[in-house]
Amino acid sequence: MALFTKEEALKYHEDKRRGKLEVFSIKPCDTQKHLSMAYSPGVAEACRAIHADKEDSYRYTNRGNLVAVVSNGTAVLGLGNIGPEAAKPVMEGKGVLFKIFADIDVYDLNIDAATPDDVVNFCRVLGPTFGGINLEDIKAPECFEIERRLKEEMNIPVFHDDQHGTAIISAAGIINALEISGKKIEDIKIVVSGAGAAAIACSDLYVAMGVKRENIFMFDSRGLIHEGRDDLNDFKRHYAQDKDYGTLADVMNGADMFLGLSVKDAINAEMVKTMSENAIIFACANPDPEIPYPVVKDVRPDIIMGTGRSDFPNQVNNVLGFPFIFRGALDCRASIINEEMKIAAAQALADLAKEPVSEDICKAYGVDGLEYGIDYIIPKPLDPRVLTWLAPAVAKAAMDTGVASKQLDLDDYVKELEERMAASKARSKGVVESFGYDF
Image (cartoon, rainbow, N blue to C red; front, side):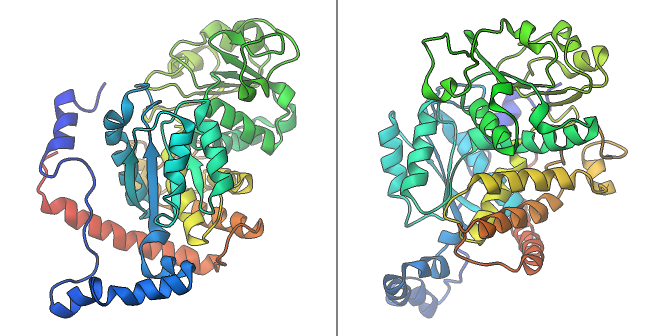
């Protein structure tokens, strides 16, 4: 059942101040002295300092806490190629999530850029203003080239969340599901339905974690990806099997995991019955997964299942990743978000799922309790500990791999994060309440 009507959703976006974000001053500007320091002539002192040392842009401006969310609207989740204007509500929403979960400021930049060159050239010149760039809702395969080129050409973190968000959250689920089932990651057979940005990125991360590439069977709309096909781009070809092993139903037989990043009803109960004991199913199509959760549990209660939905256990939700990954990357001033940082985020999520969950969090989700097991292998997004577990883990991985230019004392950093979020929430609450919304 929907939690809201179409009219309520539109009112939410239109009422009072339109949209979901606002920019306001955080420094006083009430006197002539304030004004002269904020702009001319006092601003020249900050300009001179930065001209002498560009790194001081992180000291005297908001650059170190500012992320650009960039989209051309060519692959908006569930809506497709709707263009940059129609994508803007999503990007504003992304900005809201960055703020409420990690106190990161965002400018959403929805651009009329049709080619990879257009997107790359636009993003490249943003470097002096932003601490990081979150690419969003850009279609495959162009998104792969865009991210690769920007990571090579820029010295700030560039992260395409459509690829890596699902990869990191599902990887956390895999770590715990394999522990529960007693299986080893190097032995599992994975069937992937879908071959877009998220599917490729998930598979890449799983391989980095120890899955054998030859044990990944990836399907697109034309069937199994194999070497006998002549219609594959380079990204799909990387996961081509040596021959055609048959239909999705054929390959599901004996599979240890099914990853769905495709469409509703991609698999059925008969296929599920043939999977291995204690298999994993992550059916992430939204709003309707590749197979309904109750159908799976009816025929195979042993299966460890997650979906993209919040009304079933083990939600694979990207908000568990990007705010906290960027928080850690920004605070240690990482030049890139590398594979080690992604794996560290996944491991931190997996570890947090084993910790006791407070009564307040359980109440927020309408359950009596949450305990580590097949119905709870991924933490809940509203758990405030996600920030203090993930951001330090990401920062540590960045420092350990030599991509951080700032060294953090991780114990002090955890305390700083807690204090930061308390202050941010208090400020945001006051602003929202001042409008007197009735929803």
